[in-house]
Image (cartoon, rainbow, N blue to C red; front, side, top):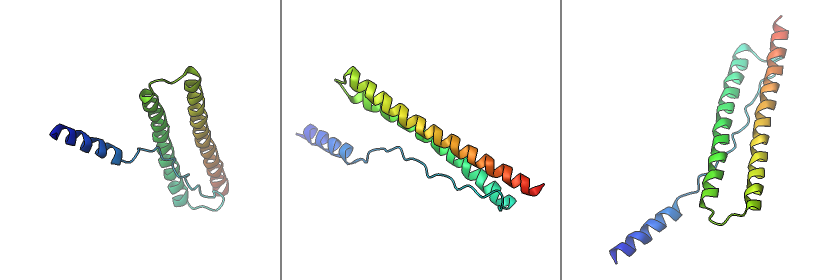
Length: 118
């Protein structure tokens, strides 16, 4: 009887735990290089670096989440596995593209900042 109660309590504890979610990071604010001060540009640079780091964590999280999910699926078909892999690839590539676009935009603002300082 005690063993049954412990098993029931353990099952309840695990179902009460929130699911771990991979949170997509908030996009960093980029200062306008044509009007920003040096301090604003440095703050923008720090925000971009923090965003990039958070995005790297997000990418690792979505990969791990998919691996863990697949591991729990006992009878997954090849088609479903391929569909899940394709969806993960799209999600991953979209996040990487977002990182590249943000970096390019920040670099444009750095060039604008340097141009006004010349």
